[in-house]
Image (cartoon, rainbow, N blue to C red; front, top):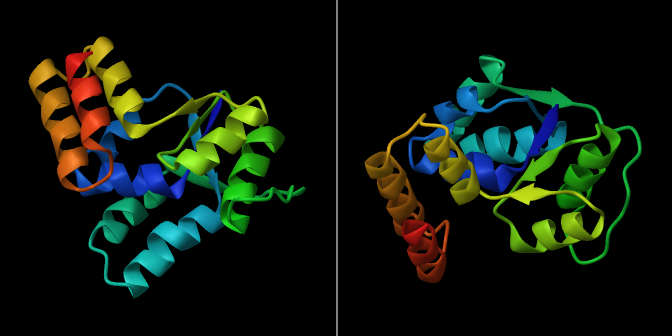
Length: 159
């Protein structure tokens, strides 16, 4: 089962030191080369410390870069986001992991099931991979790092 990962999820989980939790995801995590370029190459060029953490998960094989042969052009989102959706369609992804609201809406219109970083953490909590305290700390850190809104934070903490 393929799961496509967007830049926003990589950055969010790296910022809260939770990116290695990807090793507990059932399925093959993939992304188009453009996501790697945004998260790692441009991230390093811009001096983002989390870019090296993200590079590590590519080196370890937790997330693999794939080619996208047919790219659909969708209005209202970036070329990279269009490529992410194209990747999910082309590689018959079960899910798309993204925290980008516009990308999520466009993906859902295309029939792609979307999960955000808090959803991933909640599933790991339900599977017993992280405990309630860890889950709460991760959700709060997502808010502190401005990766989710206060409303979303409260909603996920109340789950």
